[in-house]
Image (cartoon, rainbow, N blue to C red):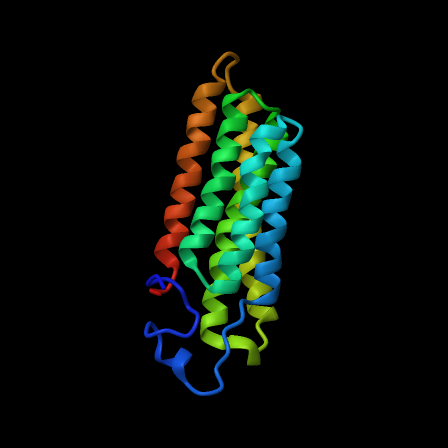
Amino acid sequence: MSDDDVSPSENDSSLSEPGFEYRPANLSGSVALAGSLVVAVVLVSVSVVVSFGAFASTIVTAVALVRGSHRGVTFAGSLCFGSVLLAGVLGGPVIPVVIATIATMLVYDAGHYAIALGSQVGSAGTTTSAELSHLGTSLTILTLFGTVGVALFVGGPGGQPVTVLLALLVAALLFISVLSLRRTPW
C-alpha cells in the first residue's frame, strides 16, 4: 500500500483505533465524480477521443476515493487536465474548454478534500457544512478564474489564442500549487 493511502495503515494512528472506519466525505466525493463526468461530456463536443481521458478519470476517481488514495485523485485530475489541454490545442470552443477546466480543478480539489475528511472523521461523522463551505469557496474562485480567462480570450488581441491558452495554463498550475500548499500533510 502506498504512503498516501488512508485505508487502515501505519500512516495515522486514528485509523488503527478500534471502530474507526474510513469513508470519503459524501458530498465532496460526489462532486469529484460529477466533475470528471462533466469534463467528459463537455469535451465530447470537441472529440470523442479527447473525452476518453476524462471518462477514464471517472473510474480512477471512484477507485481512489474508495481506497483513500491521494495519488489516485491526482492521477484522475491529470487525466482530466490532459483531456482539457488536448481540447484547447485542437481548437475546441472556448466556453466548453473553460467549463471543463473548472470541472477538472473541482475533481482535484473535491477528491482530495473528500479523502482528507474521510481519514479524519471516518464513517461516523457528519461533514456536510464543512464540505459546503470548502466547495463553495473553491467554486467561487474557479468561476472567477474562468470568467477572467474567457474575458482575456474574447477581449484580447485577435490571432493570439496560444498566448491566452498559455496564460490559462499558468493560472491553473498556480491554482493547483495554492491548493497543494494549503492541504494538511497526509
